[in-house]
Image 1 (tube, rainbow, N blue to C red):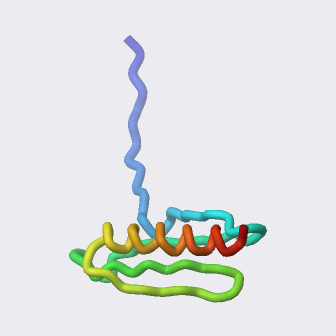
Image 2: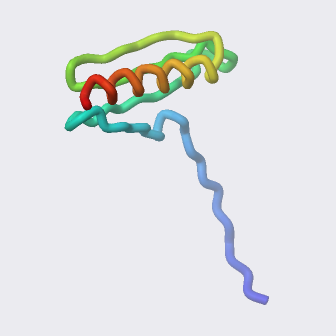
Length: 77
């Protein structure tokens, strides 16, 4: 049997980047907890500007991101 030493890997949520394409534009977005139990901040970075909104739950923020992503991708088509 061969053994391998393991190491701890810490992944911080702020290190994760989410992107989508709206036409030729790369749009970045993230959802972050303002405090441990919320509210949750959705930030969308578009070349034309930044949208920031706050939600009581992460699932509500993700649903809003999907709606904005659909709007931007359809508008760019």
